[in-house]
Length: 243
Image 1 (cartoon, rainbow, N blue to C red):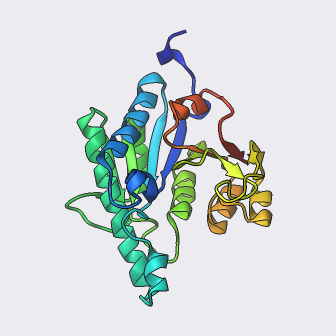
Image 2: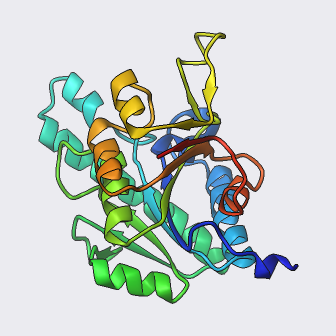
């Protein structure tokens, strides 16, 4: 069977990229090489199977609202700054995808018509049906909500089959932080309730609850692992499944 004949586990997925993933080893800013790797991974999946891919990007590599609030800044103002940071990451990913031949659209929850479309659910779905990668930026457009919540919300709105949550340097969900506790165990599967009750670092509680209410599975995996997105869509047990 050829790669083009592979049937994906889900026909439509939402890929959640943290802002830190764009920074690479530097920890801040946008690393062009890393963005190229992310873009190529998306293109490889699109080339090998019929699957719709939407992306939600974070902005922590440029600005974190909580950091600004911790320094005495008004939380809402700091969060709006964080939303603008996600637009910068979205534009960087779009430029790289387009340069590699993959049609894309950026939709922003904050209106900025010169650089992005406004978020319109039906238009986003239409773009996906036409084979475009849709990148959601600007968070939910509201302060006090994380891009994790944005990912859960957009995934439900576009009727995605799952959220693929790519982590930078983390291959799944552990019982504790493996960087500080060498006894921490990787969990292959975990329930939404366990995530909430045990305080596991997957998504914030609002996002987890939204996924639980809509029976939306989450796969947590190492974003830069070799062909992991394709392998997950082919049904391999990689990372941690939250369901």
